[in-house]
Image (cartoon, rainbow, N blue to C red; front, side, top):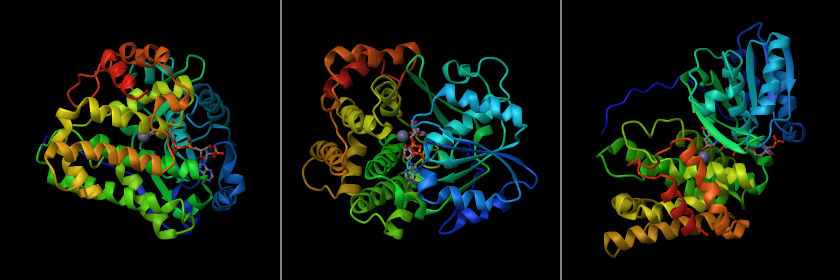
Amino acid sequence: MNNFEFANPVKVVFGKGTIARLSALIPAGSRVLMVYGGGSIKKNGIYDQVTNALNGFEVTEFSGIEANPHYETCMKAVDVVKKKNIDFLLAVGGGSVIDATKFIAAAYYYEGEPWDILSKGGVIKKALPLGVVLTLSATGSEMNERSVISRAETREKLNFASPLVFPQFAILDPEVTYSLPARQVANGVVDSFIHVVEQYLTYPVNAKVQDAFSEGLMKVIYEEGLKVLDNPHDYDIRANLMWAATNALNVWIGQGVPQDWSSHRMGYALTAQFGLDHAQTLAILLPGVMTYMFKEKQVKLARMGEVVFGITGGTEEERARRTITACEDFFRRMGLKTRLSECGITENDLDALAAPVDRQGWHLGEHHNIDSKVTRDILLLRL
Ligand code: NZQ
Ligand code: ZN
């Protein structure tokens, strides 16, 4: 196991009816900016629950955060924060709203051009405090220090991380996910599953705790994920998926182990240039990374196959190959596509899709050996 330092300060409030706890979680007297998306919260009762719970606070609303949130929209919110003298941000939404809120929190104090936080690793010295009411379980953003923002003007999608944007609290009420469209439910299942994979599926470093937690999470997400679309109002399924998704990326299982976020990074361009949902990019790319990096990942692929999918018999190599097929089958059973050609992407598009790897100077994968040429080769495997 590698050395690590770990702290996660997010207070989680989990369960039915917990949105009512908001008033006790936000510091008294705060001037709150309530940040949300395109309006789903007004149709499913979440808006009413939140505004009732905020009774007594001075609240300003900022709506219209897009899926894959835009830098341009976040900067409009920063103006509102300044104008209204806001001192607490409340994100009510999924990963996009939470990520936007984290960026707003950091951009407000940033000296210089806030896009540099994303494109040049600009250092965040101060951020506004924020809290979260989660409406879609997928990204783990509610309990981590990461954020992914897109710039519509240049069709770029980039991420940043800072301990200063950990939410102060996250309210997780599984019942609010009942209203999600099937596509978003499936996206959440696949995204959270792949978060575990990208922290687990590298080479063994004898990290028994991390491996056992990761294998448990993948098994839960796989088993409950296959049930949820047919049982959308089953509280236990929703609760288990929600807590699994949070644990999949609260940066706990990744401590002390090598990680491989190449499918995520390569996927940004698929979203920025072709508008694919985040999870959709991963369902296409992960089997490609597993195949291309097969030798490096064989030991853990075989182990993952046995524990998660019950794959036994045959050689280690055979079991590892069957694990790749099992993952792709799982994503397809959830209703996602697994090929670029199914999304209208052709070989002519691959150079542009690989270009951000060079532009950002990324060396992806657990061995840092995925450059833009390898990225192109992996994309080619997924046509
Ligand atoms: O905008 P509204 O109208 O609210 O609709 C949203 C949105 O259209 C809808 N929705 C959310 N909760 C709902 C609901 N509809 C009905 N009922 C509810 N309870 O769902 C749509 C998708 O929402 P979004 O927040 O975009 O989805 P998700 O949570 O999957 O977030 C995706 C974003 O998170 C980033 C992705 O790159 C992408 O930009 N990620 C963030 C990470 C992080 N911060 O750690 C890690 C992830 O790997 C990921 O990259
Ligand atoms: Zn993800």
